[in-house]
Image 1 (cartoon, rainbow, N blue to C red):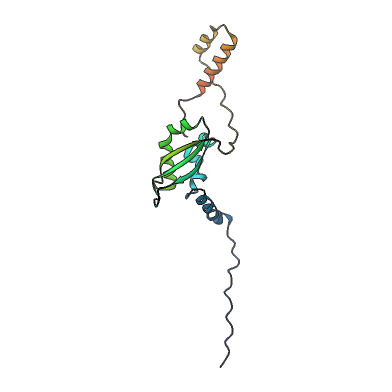
Image 2 (cartoon, one colour):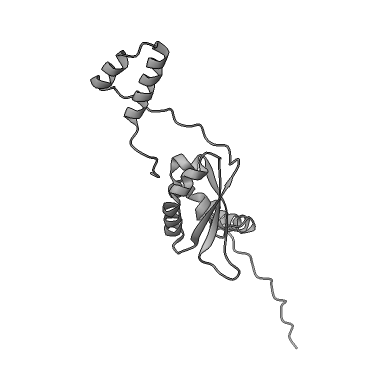
Length: 169
């Protein structure tokens, strides 16, 4: 009988390296699932969901679903103490934006946990005070106390630059 040559082990593919971006999603997905996130998009796009102002002071903690469900979950958010009541006012917009980014009705409720969040980037400088109308200037001239007059003038200038209640932009 003729001898058959032994089979060679299959060769590993060579020549093609994978981009880091292809691997990060897999590695990040494992870490996100471990800490309660099945969707990394919530963390990656948090600034789009809540806006840059709120994103500096809060972050998503976890997304939990009822046993066996993958919809109508509860999103837990860590927020600094003063921001928690403000988040309650924009809760419907946060839920709607999170669900739009995730592509399905993943979030139905939000819980807010007050406490320290990640280190916030420095806040942008406040806008330059706007010019006061002449009617405000004339009413401030009637105040005798110079310290009170200066305080009220700075308050009036700050109000001139604001545009209503806070909003997610």
